[in-house]
Structures are given as structure tokens and as C-alpha cells.
Amino acid sequence: MVGRWQGAASRSLVMHSDPLAAYAYRWLGGLVPIPRIDRIFGWFWSHLRGLGQMFDAVVCAGDDYADRLRAGGVCNVRTIGMGVERGLFSPSLRSNNLREEALRGIGLDADATLLLGVGRFSAEKRWNMVMRAAAEVGRKRPVGMLLVGDGPKRFGLELLANRSPQVAILPRITDRMELARLIASVDALVHGCEAETFCMVAAEARASGIPLIIPDRGATADQLVSGAGTAFRAGSQISLERAIKRFLDRGPELQRAAAVRASLVRTMDEHFADLFAHYEQLLPERRLVPVSGLSAESPLPAAI
Image 1 (cartoon, rainbow, N blue to C red):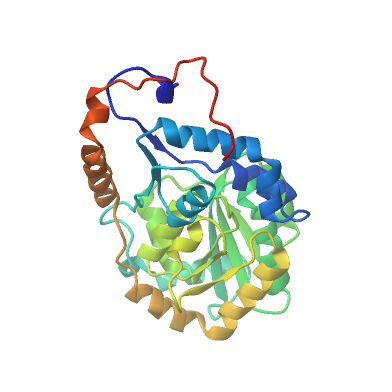
Image 2: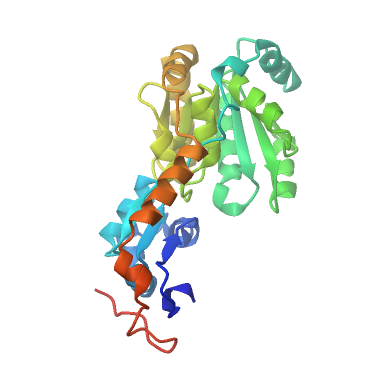
């Protein structure tokens, strides 16, 4: 393991996954408060604290995850936000023709509201919850949804879409410019996963000047702009339905105007510049002196 390596180089751990949010909180969150889940998984927190002691830096892409790690006693945590591909996503790519064509494809007129979901079709993304919420609101309000992606849950999601005429599933879009045009042309991005460590598609939607309807936990919430979308209680379909209705009642166009004003976002070039600068700032003595006192057989530190 890198943390126990006896070489002289500095060590950084980049946290691109959040197992507690993706699994423990999702499985037990409807039954047990999160603080109690954390106590149940105290052994895992002990493991994380041990990693913090082994590495010079524990790098997170968003403040939500970094704050949770610090609160759990993990040391050396640093937030270095990720970003979007420079020059690709922009409000200028919006196409009313593309929007109207997409709405016609799900049987709606141009004055309806078009929601978009983009991502991997896996359990922690909660697309089944998102689709059911959009379909339920669509029973009484002119709302449709497109879901773009692929993954192991595709078959079940397609069955659900077959029962929801105002929800359609599209294949994964590999042409980045085509995806950028689609994102810029919808009325809001809707996302269900509270286990994101950054949520690239939310950042891309923000760069495209599109409001967000997102969970109130996880890194996705870092992208929410005041007046440009709304949040719902993570994991709750009822709360998501209410959030979609709030979005409609507040006026999609007004919220899109606010999103356009806040569409200047961080780029991946800026992310890597800050990341490499942080590596340069790591203590020079740790780059010259091998780690001592931690052998391959050494146990992880006990819980604090």
C-alpha cells in the first residue's frame, strides 16, 4: 500500500469515491440516522483516520466530503475542486429547436418543461427514484424528462420508462459537443445521487447556464446557485417531487437567467494547476526522509 511505502516521496490520497454515502447511508439511511450509521461503521472511520496519518494530503474535489472527513477526525484533508472541460460547455449552445424536438418526442408541446438526467445507470445514482418523481409530477403538470447514459440498471430503467410516456431513455452520448448542446437546451438538470465526490455533469450543467434540481447532500450541492434551481432531501422521492413543483412555480426561465449569470465555472486546467501547486508545497522533509514507524504489518490506528 502506498501509505506504508518506505520511499522518500510525499504521499497524496485522492478521494474519488465515498463508500459510506454510496452504500451504508443509502442502504440504512431510511431507517437509521446518519450519526448512528457512522457509529456502526466506526471501524471504517478508524481506517480513514489511519489513512490520513499515512498520507501528506487527503485530497477531495468538494467541500461536502472534505468537511465530513475532517469532522470524522481525518487529518491532512484539502479541498481542490475539479472543473469542466475548457471551452466546451456554454449557454450559447442552447437550441430551442433541439428542445422542442425533444419535447415532441415524449408527446409534449414547446411550453412544457424539459428535465435532463445524465450519468451511469447504477443503483447509487437513484435514477428509478428520479424517473418516478418526474413521471408523478408529469401526471398533473406539463413536465418531461430525458435520461442519458448506460449501465447495469438499464433494463429495469427501460421497463420503468415504458410505463411513463413522458420519460424517455437515450443511449450514452459519446460526442461531447452533442452532449453540451443537449445540456444547454433543456430547462433543468435533475440528479438523484447524494454520493458524488464532485459530480461532473452538475458542473457541466452550471457551465451551460442550466438550473439544477439536486439532493441536499454530496458534492452535487456545491454547484447549486441561489435562484437557479433547488435542492431536495436526499433519497426522498416525495421531496424530489416537491422540488420539481417548486422549480416550476418559481419560473424556469427566471431561474435559467440566474444560472446563465453564474455560468463561469472552474476548469480542469485550473484544477490541475492547483493540484500540482499543492504537491509542490508539501513539506520538503517528507520528500527526503522515508516514513518510519509504519511497516506492512503495522495495524491501523485505533478509533479516536
